[in-house]
Length: 128
Image (tube, rainbow, N blue to C red; front, side, top):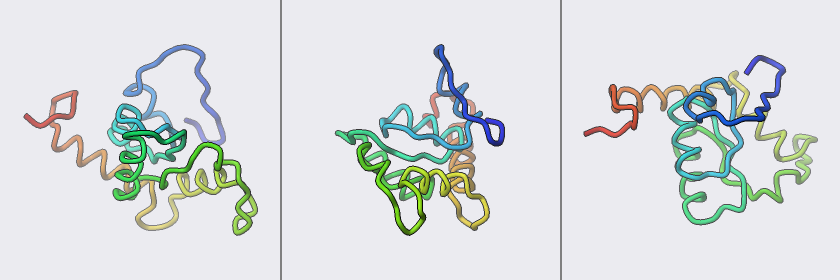
């Protein structure tokens, strides 16, 4: 979570404890990963085989302005000639770029505040 560092863990950790330490997340788009990333205010790049709800959650992240459209895992390393890098590098740059108004990071942090406000003190984030 420090600038210029890559976080690698060899043992388990809850998403709720780990995700707030991240600057961005590459996830498979399932409910658990996506909801915890949104709660933590972390931009999401959704990739994987994109089955069932994964495409739906990726679309929600995109609609909220908190991350990328879904990208199939085998296309992440495709070369993007307009950026002279792979698609993955392009998406990571977008996820980490805070210079533009309405960037993924600022939107993610705002969505996290909105979720916390609605959820109140309920750790499940469910308004009862």
